[in-house]
Amino acid sequence: ILLTSFLRYIEGLPCTDQSTKFFWKINSSGSKNFKLCSWLITKKKKKRKEICERTSPSDQLLAKDVCPVTCDTCPSPAPSVVPSLVPSSVPSSSSRPSSVPSLTPSSQPSDVPSQAPSLSPSSTPSTVPSVMQSSSPSNDPSQVPSSVPSSAPSSVPSLKPSSGPSSVPSQVPSLLPSLRPS
Figure 1: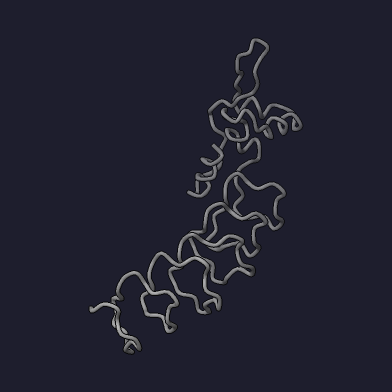
Figure 2: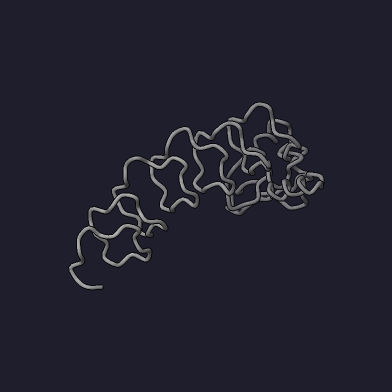
């Protein structure tokens, strides 16, 4: 429901308390008790705050989700100047990345590549080859050969011959004759 309030805000619709009931408590007989926002608004500020800050049970609609106006959980029209101590449950929408790096990296890669390289290399190499070649290739060869052949011949001869013939003829003839005729 908080997401619904956020989406309503994005669409320019006002953030409003819902007519749906929220989970209040389990009574002495063990049955679940639900209340409306109109009931919550009649409570004293301290009690209302306590009810609005509840986070469990997670499988039930809570007051903060159903009563965003009463609980003061409507999304703000602009980001705050001072970062919050606790991350929000709904991501902010921005066309630009943050100017401050995250303290904990995300589990998923970004949809938009960064414009500048990282200041430090990653601790684990990528399992996917780069789409673009590096502007400054490494001086040391990799320990494991690539699974895809290169598109151009090497300028340095291989110490170990390949298992199959080359698809591109060499520019320089061999110094030694072949062991078998071609």
